[in-house]
Image (cartoon, rainbow, N blue to C red):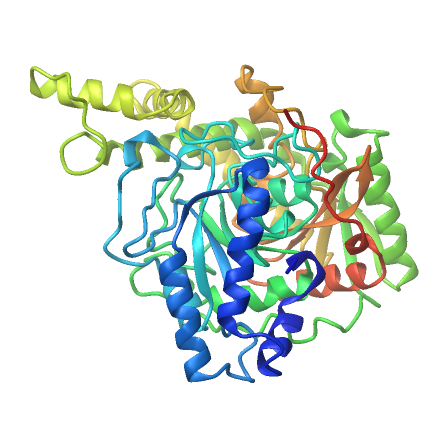
Length: 488
């Protein structure tokens, strides 16, 4: 069964009507993975035995006709803890780590009846934009195997784009859901900071990280966000308010909606390209559907990249100090002193990009440099957040390109860290402001998907889904499927 042909509601209906069983559905997942993953490289760990046992239990209990997610498969990014299943964060440091508990999102998916089929590749500790920084394998883009799938959630995106699973979870610190969604032609949601619990997510930047879903369609995405959202006492930053049904009002259309177009987001690197043209065509379509298009300004977004990389790296240097070769994780064998344990274990266990960010973060927080770097980055972050708040006084959502390019060649930017960092220029301001944003396909450039991001007010994912659904229903982008061309 190719999951590119079915929505979650389609699969649910077939399960309820007994056109196939949950076990047969799960077996087809592993057949899909066996057929395509040698080319794509999305999965790091499979838990076939447990998944089939859970599917058998679902069949014996009976598929709940009122629960759309009951008995359906899901892939999990490998920085999200799964009890009894290896969770590596794609790092040598954690290559044998098996958690003793589930992350809150995994618990919630299980409560919703979903079945985890395995763990998905990523950039090590979520640091990167191409999934080339994984210590374990390279993941390739199903649209063109010579291209990257994006990062850091590249495995999560590639698995859904390849039709291996109908849905996966990723995490987004500076664009790590939206950028791979854009590169692989998917719908990817970065929820409002605090909307989804971070308990059980291996931390990168604690004030920026958010877990969110990858799907083929907008409504599927909203259904999964329904399942994973909500208050969690184990996460002190978890939102204490009510969680709405994100599918409610999704089909209301966009008549009367005010859509803001941030002029700074039509970035100089992407001007007059097919990316900008695709987004402008989408805006024209919104206008025809009755939305009002308004130009807005986010003037401080130009500070997004430097502010983000100082703040994220500072938080990473603090979060990753726990991996010291003593309590858990990789320990060097060639040691002669306590200092050797720390220095050699961390030198050998962490990859180059992780070490680069630890050094940047430690420097930014050090005595004599804190005021010059971290404090200024935090002030810039406040200005960026205020820009969004001001813009949302006049508009309901913002629409802009997700990225300044389509998927680039494997190896194309890995030796140029600054070029890789600049690829996040249109996504990081959203994380700094804590607002929600969704990437949706809006066209193609040289047969590679182009993504458009729809940004909303804090805790207003419903309006984002409404705008995205209206656009999706007016287009035929779902008709085109990955070709698996290229590669070695």
